[in-house]
Image (cartoon, rainbow, N blue to C red; front, side):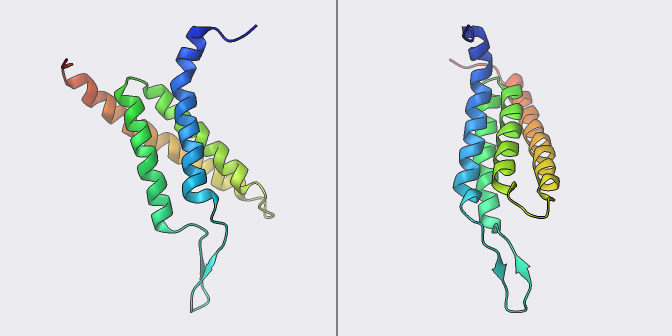
Length: 132
């Protein structure tokens, strides 16, 4: 009893965006686990600003591409699920147990950001006549 083609066709864009989100997390953030200690003893990290910016730009491009093709729900759902899953897997070994707070913040933030970007792209797409 496999999945029917219409189900796969509907889920395909969301799965692609989720895969891009997981891969982007791994490429930009997944490898960096060390904290940086500054000269004054303060600690920052594990991620640098350029890493998070790179992840944001990568996901912005993926969400724009999906939304421009009319897959706004897939862009929002795929990004949210992919980033939430990646954050959970990456942070679940945290001994303090507070990692779920971060995971929930990633989930809410990625949902809101991808929904706003998708809505803007969808509005722009609908306002422009198709050129062939």
